[in-house]
Image: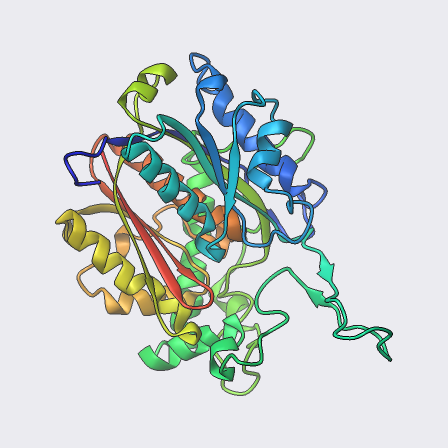
Length: 398
């Protein structure tokens, strides 16, 4: 937020659940309850804050067709037992919904419309429902077609060019084709994600930001595979191109459940929380790209946000790049030769941790903020690719 007439915006705190696997430990928890859990935990960590001072709760959610259908942000406010005077709104930018929630919260604070906002995201891919569209005419013959709302395209508009509605995995294959990314490179990237995530949990790197769900036995992210190996990953068959494909279940992010939340304030709001800020929100950018090349969406978004802040890749202390697919992440890195790969996802990424769609943007933004706080100073970047061809990026500073 570089305009001098705008207020500085701070991330006072950030929390997330450990991420659950599809059908795993969090599958019994409704998405509105997941959202309420992180909201309650976040506010509870700032005992000096009067919850009635919260101006809004903004949450990202990519589905919206199931138990979260009635504005899950407002449902979270009520279920968390915040004052009923605290409003809530839900936004959807698919995989970047949680980051979009943070960006919208930061804008409201920067302009002076609000002082304290809770921003976050939630997704239960396990509990995403099957849906049946209404028939075009009365008394149709035959059985209706059902669609899973877990992930990807459904009920596609026939006016869409077919290349725009390819599966997400085929889109990752296209990125691999474009950049000559081999199966071996993707598997090596995936293995490193698991190794870094397992090491980070062992070293206590996530202790400051994770809040376990009551009554759920989930001490850490559920899809981290400590014992996986290059040989194990190499043995998996391609999923989207049986012949000649390179994208497998092992070098892709899994289906997941989880939630994350951040406390966003101006100076006065920060004093009301009694906290030292983790980081300051500097700027954001969002861009579009051909839908089938969604995996490269972050490329231009990152370039734009760095240009807006006057930073270069060399200035970055830490980068959290959501790993929808190894091919997608490697494709982005190939477009940023100035970026040191060692700065990217130092505590593991979504291939290991998981990708609960609406929560992931909030998770990685919180991860950047906590890492900057631990370092004491620096510039951090969070970025995600977005289905249907978008990319979003955010720069934080401390």
